[in-house]
Amino acid sequence: MSSSPQNTLQNRIQLFGRRKGKALRNARRDLLEKDLPHLRIELKTLETGTDPRVFFNPPVERVWLEIGFGGGEHLIAQASAHPEIGFIGAEVFENGIASLLQQRIDAKLENIRILDNDAREFLPLLQNASVERVFLLYPDPWPKTRHAKRRFVNRQTLDELARIMPLQSELRIATDHPVYARWCLRHIPTHPNFQWQVNRAKDWRFPPGDAFSTRYEQKAITQGRTPMYLTFRRVIG
Image (cartoon, rainbow, N blue to C red; front, side):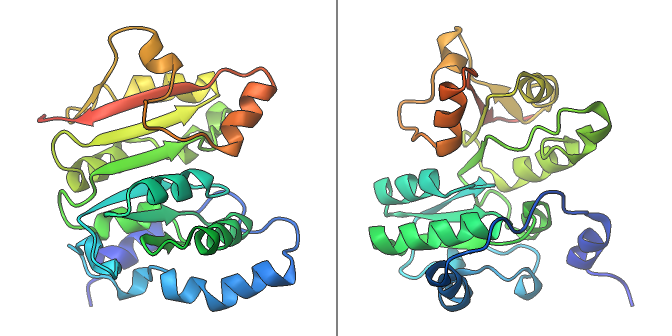
């Protein structure tokens, strides 16, 4: 029997990074047990070519994806500002997931779904041109050369992003780590389907006008590190 694309990916992809941090309070643990199952996207139930809009009820017009949403504050802010858009947040760190669940309740949002799994397994299952914006905010830079293969940005993931993103859609990356910024600028502009949107220094020194800050961004600024904001547009190769 031949392997499905999903099984092939699961056999090939190794997940790096933490799943658990300090012990959760009982209320946060209850959120993971009671609320997460209703919002979770189950990879094992998906077929290749899935339209991500099917995850949302009430229906949404478009879908945006945040890969590694951390504490969830950016995802919540975007979902609050754009109720007509469905937001998929990918995160494996359960403390961050629990935080997002609580913020979602506080904000009374229905346009959020959660992938508590590796986004690299999710992308190949999505329909072509089905995700209109992708955020990768302050990802783990894996700064050591021997760990470079662990970085999310590589040719394989860029190929998948190019496939699921329609023309003129945006890939937004923020990082406070110069090694990761150089890595992105070495690999993404050379991909035939992505064009760096920059005309002057302020285009990467300041966030887009409709951006929202994250706790990681504020921490970086407080500690004297300079965030860099890189926006890439999906173009014809």
